[in-house]
Length: 144
Length: 141
Image (cartoon, rainbow over all chains, first blue to last red; front, side, top):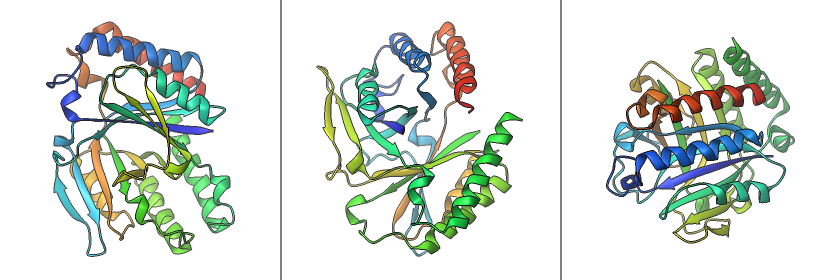
């Protein structure tokens, strides 16, 4: 089963900002955690996101999309990064989330990623086939 | 440059009716257009928060609460990661996404190792490069 751990934190906790932990310690602890995930063979992907000041918000409400510039100051917590894990159970995903070396004020959302088989009967079969093809094309391009 | 488009939506407002097949088709066309353009690195949807958990770090032991996260106004419903030449290009893909019910897409740059040069110890950056290589070998990308 695949799970996503979504890290949500106030932007003031980013490295270099007012409430951030000491940079060197934080980087080292996170490096150790990521190494454990790779050693266990469970890490599919992980990325961090740049501050929302570099971002945009696109709202789709029927009128055509409207665009708002970052930073998203009204948001108390923002997505700061994520991990994607392949684990045997939800419990295993929660256990990995608990071990994450992050400080007070941070939340990790543990969310399951549905597999295509779950959409059989819900989505038209030809669309599921098309999605399989798309995923293959992405994988081939990344190997190239 | 890599950008993440994060779909944010109001789960409480979500109807219990099964999704419209037309929505699957529009989403399929949107995904195909991104793959045709060679910009899509990854994309996934997430199961409802009722199947998830939230782990809160508040100093002591982390606290685990089971979903659904009913008090959250907006939840992440899925994401795409794009490799594009500019922010404008990422933004124009975000505008083309087939949504119309108040969904919001956060367009966020994905950090690269260079972002952390001078901030993180060099050996941590080197180790991360190695980790990424091992992870790719294990699972593909």
